[in-house]
Amino acid sequence: MDTRRLFLLLTAALAAACARVQHERADSDIDESTRATIAAAVDSATRAFRAAEAAHDAEATVAHLAPDFTMLLDGARVGYDSVAASTRRVLPSVVHFEPDWTDIQVRVLGPNAAVSSFLFRDSLVLEGGEVVMARGPTTLVWERRGPDWLIVFADADHYPFR
Image 1 (cartoon, rainbow, N blue to C red):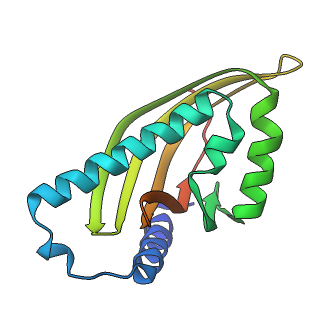
Image 2: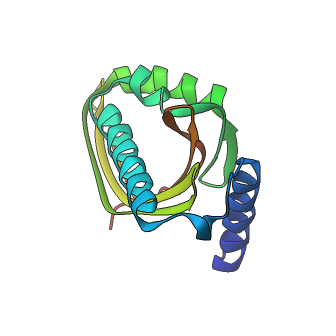
């Protein structure tokens, strides 16, 4: 997929996700202390999501997803039901998982919305000895729902190791 098309897809997805969020005030009205608190909470949620995957804990991983979650996975649109079922099927069959996430960045969009992004380099071994290795970018759109931050949209692209 060319860079321009990917940019347009990501921009449209982020705009749609942000339009759903109920803002009580404009992003520019968030003071730096509140912005830092939100960024820390979303960074923590992102790292908890990674830890759940690394621990092969399917239920804890799925618990980070909003019921209306959607995702672009290597260019294919998938929803909550598909991702939750796949996670519950695959994670328990993982013998060894090394999720290496680097350059985690959080951008606060408003009092109830933020985006985290990172680069991943994952290596896992499935039952039966199959080794799966991939690297790429991931973007997660988080929305505060009650006291919890949940992922409402994600985009991940997988490339072979170099």
